Length: 259
Figure 1 (cartoon, helix red, strand yellow):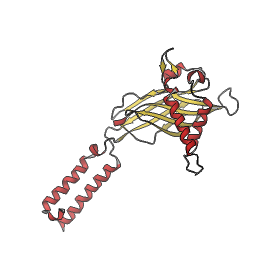
Figure 2 (cartoon, helix red, strand yellow):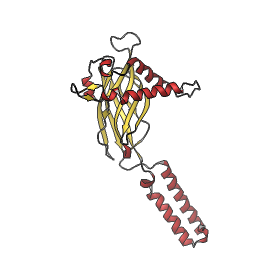
Figure 3 (cartoon, helix red, strand yellow):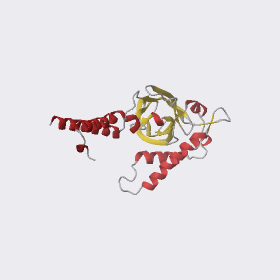
Figure 4 (cartoon, one colour):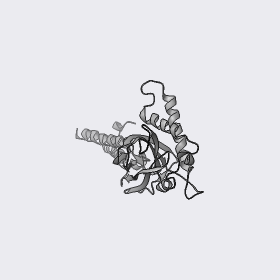
């Protein structure tokens, strides 16, 4: 039955109820409102390029994104993708590259890990191969450079298979050697990932980390991760669309009543 077959008062009441539902629906419609923003403040003695970040989430998922580079001194890395406190990030590991550190041959490249500070202290001046026994540093550096420096087959060069394989290798490292390569204290395996702590809506949670450059682990900086959470969930786009539809229904009905 069409609404035009109903008494006007009943029709208006039904439409108004639908509009009210649109205004009260955000929590139900947006099961995971995007209310978390991540940022990392890094203070390094040397520039770090080809940065890629890895995050682990409450649902067991893992995601990555790459924010290019940071210069010498204080820099901020802002994650452009909002997260949900319903699936809050639990921990992070950030990889990058540094070249021409003191004492290097020209063009020498080092893998950089922005990592748990206790694990970093335990890996100070310990060779890469001692900590990460299943991963070749030069190969990992090449994969970091390839993934962060190119776009997956966007230029039609057919490199998508190589790009996918390189990214998968980075995931293998972060979920393998980086999870269990460091001994803190001796004999106890520890992860290079640093934890965010308890994410509470309406607050900002901070977590310290250390910037380490290998092959021979050396501290080249420090950092602070910030998880800023809105006190009120931010509705997802489909929620806004539903609210707008409700407004349009009310406006149209009001015009008909005036007519």
